[in-house]
Amino acid sequence: MSVLDRKIDFAVVLTVRNANPNGDPLNGNRPRQNYDGHGEISDVCIKRKIRNRLQDMGESILVQSDERRDDGYRSIKDRVDGNEELQKYAKGKTKDNILYSKIACESWMDVRSFGQVFAFSGSEVSIGIRGPVSIHTAVSLDPIDISTMQITKSVNSTTNTKDPDKKTSDTMGLKHRVDYGVYVFYGSINPQLAEKTGFTYEDAEKIKQALITLFANDTSSARPDGSMEVNKVYWWEHNSKLGQYSSAKVHRTLGDVLKEGYSDTLIPNKLEGLDVEVYEGL
Image (cartoon, rainbow, N blue to C red; front, side, top):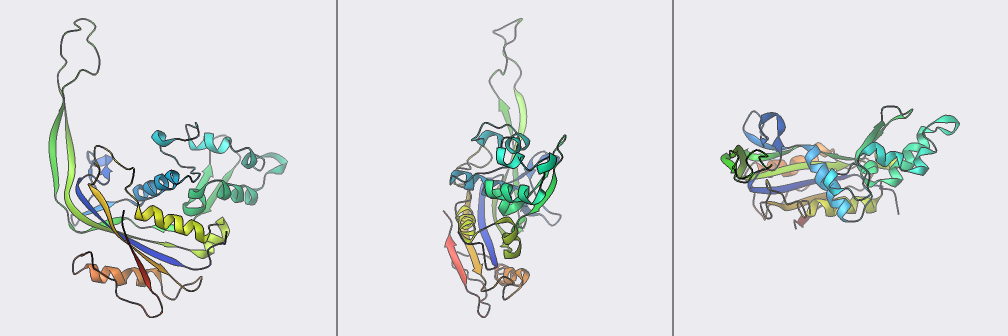
């Protein structure tokens, strides 16, 4: 496989209908909003979904959700400690931060994509790896409307030992959703950092496929099937490592058009010498 030899920029437009795309735990799990009322989905949330899709594709992932563990390890530290080749260079006379980083990047795709900090209690290792793939926070094009409903639980969680036939009081709660919103997020892949982590062009293609299928196998009570959809993925491949244009300028070609509203036929403003590939979401 060939190490990435060109700069890549991308953008994703997605639609939310009657779902909570990213709840804020500090605000009663309401959908995230900025001070202008626009909806937000954090970059951490987006990376989590990309990791899940890469895991579904059979890629080895270090930062796994607990409910999606596929190797029996209960934590990142356990997963790192279970890598025998990695541990050869973790301490003692054979300690080598460069080889440690190299093996970590070879072992897990999310490490060579997004980077990772390896610093655990009781460990001699303290290494930070910068990944080539960067993701912005997704922001809705317009202010969002949030609906809230009260929900109750009509089944006993535990049995009343003193009176087994007695029904416990219903538990009250709130459930929030975005009625409708079109969100957009941007990202880029840096070839200079790709050289350091061993991120390849084939890896970039896998990231693209993960973006196209971002909400596949992502069903939950807050996000029922069909409530979140990738509309379009915009993909720019430059002809050099530095790129013909800055990422800000490339992303702005789409952002300027989106100010007029989104449609399925929308095409970004063209930059001379840089073509955009447009993919339909799954």
